[in-house]
Image (cartoon, rainbow, N blue to C red; front, side, top):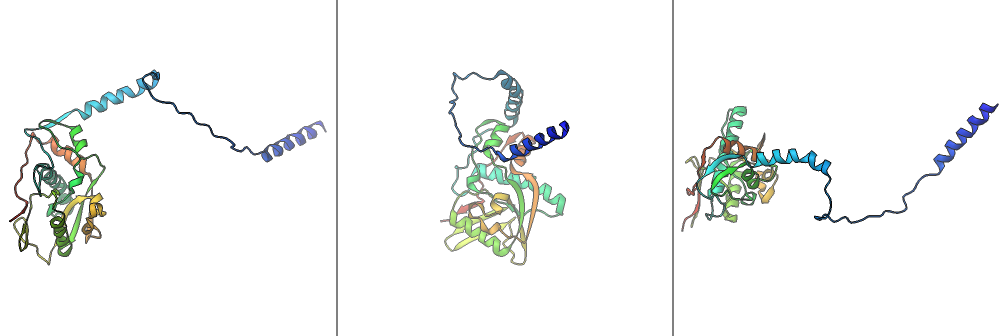
Length: 250
């Protein structure tokens, strides 16, 4: 009988507890300013310092050299840095694309605003690559119809900015319109064209809507920044000039 009574009270207490639900009635916050007076936690510092030193070493590692400042503003419709960026991405991206498809990319195009820093004269480090391309953009190849390609050309003519174009392209704005060629050949309306760009632009970034809904989309699984770093590593001295790939004729 004693055991029955104890069991009864135990069950009673359990059910009683479930009825008394806890409720949040007040939240208090306190501002803790981070100043020099705030003592650092030595255990935390010891934990992250090795990672900090390793990261600094990697970011400061020298990849190559440039004998002059490479900037995105030394031309009107093209730039030394934009030309370099488009050409190196074409080279690295085309290697992957051809290996997978057996085809060649026709040219590469990116956006002027995507270049976030220049490369100063001297040693070029991993940090320079991150400053140049801080975004996690991936390289993609879009297969465009001749109609879409003409929309791309009209975009370049309307915007009149130094959007990076690879050296396969020659675009000249004239009084009567424009002259456009890829590897010295005019547009063939019966062909489609493979254009290398970033996934950001392919989704319509910078209003480049002509990259949307292509005939086919090829994802290279290759970050633009990684392509830059890979190219820098295999190059002793960076070289790039204004070569008239996009000009306006008076």
